[in-house]
Length: 120
Image 1 (cartoon, helix red, strand yellow):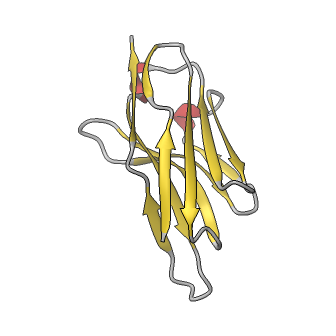
Image 2: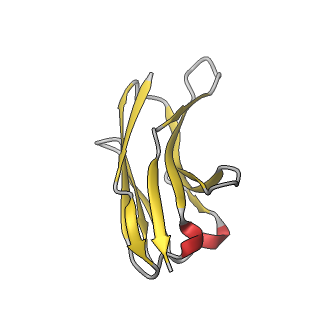
């Protein structure tokens, strides 16, 4: 099992910044990918950004140039620095971990979610 604890959400005005943190604990070996999803009211959950075990980072187009994902491998922490926030970035942000153990069966783990609200 992997436990995920998120922090850093809040209310910010458009143009402001927030940094989300997610600490993974428990069976953190064989983590293949860590990242953040978000879900706006009435919309499907979408992948915002993720980082692979070899350091490849992907971003959804709408956040490129504004958000930066980083990972502290030693501490199993993933950060999402969000700059130039827009009202459309509002939503619940979920930390996500994908484990790929030797069995080859992937496991998904989710954090409890942290609210990000950007006012116009």
